[in-house]
Image (cartoon, rainbow, N blue to C red):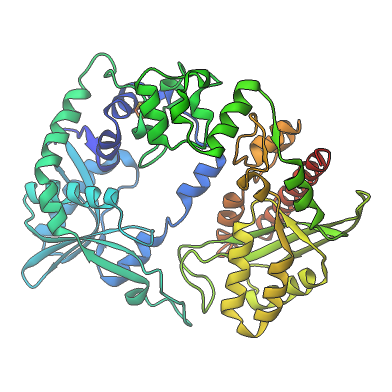
Length: 491
Ligand code: SF4
């Protein structure tokens, strides 16, 4: 069989940007390295496809041992179909130089049904396009699919004693949309196949497609003409506004027409960048910091958001807290007490919730940096254990988020931008090397790592993970303290 040129992922890459497809095929060495956090994101929900097989049990898995063995999978799929096998997992087909592997193919009541499984809570337009391509290849390869479906997670599913796959998953028939997309798919495949024969990359300038639907991995290559101090540093403008300006030849902040600077946040950011000066609202900062009750607890909480609920009573992707580290800080700037709580993976969340609330209940102000996960975790405890809701409400009142100063336009530093993550804060405070030496560098990595421990029997791995989240949380609190001191110096 002639080797395929496009797969589902390369086709979808070409839908996003033909240049991204060309570079992927011809200049893969130009690709940006995946960050640790991106790797962690990719590994989330990896088992969902296998779990969905229980919706159609008894099938045969024809997935290849390595990605190079897909031609064998296509042949094996064909053999199984000819042998009358009614359920095939990872059924592979090739047509018009495009290879696809469908999660579940079912033959029932004389009709073929296709199912593609996604680990998200709803069906996006990208998933519909993806299913449309499957439909195109499979039907043209000779299997007249009656319907193509997307199976996704049910956001309202609550785990009981055991996972009930029939309620955990939601199946949506997307055949109508797939049929409407067929001519687009065919044209796009032909266009993509032509592009892959080019000697030079297609002339496509940067645009909205660089981040939509996914951040492209050739940003460093394509964006190298964009100066470090460009309009793209202005988060107060929407991407559409920025590209409208870029497409009309504006790339430097100093060239932005006054009429485009139409909100206080845009004005503030433009001015701060032009003058390379920090903006701070002394009164606003003073008022915010004046609300802190000492000794204040500088806190870091970590949550897991597992696609597959791990505990009875929980939902997919619910924020379940598993770690807290707090450092009690006096008004004079001394740490007088450090505390830590960790929920082992075998422990149920209620034991941990009680310990966590006991700790937080004792604290004065509890200060976090970007506390959205923390609030979701407290909401989870409230919903899950209504008897603790009064305590949770009292604790929520005591929680403050240093990032609110940025969100409320009380502080803006052109180097940090308006949404600095730990990486930017580390660089700002000269702790770049320490940050990059951390084995865990983000909350997502911590959450994914914790979820991965549920089936881990090696105690060493558990211990190593615990050490890593301890260091990450300690470092996060150190940054929080440095940022607090910095802002106090501006009062
Ligand atoms: S960075 Fe933008 S222009 Fe370059 S390949 Fe990616 S999507 Fe296309």
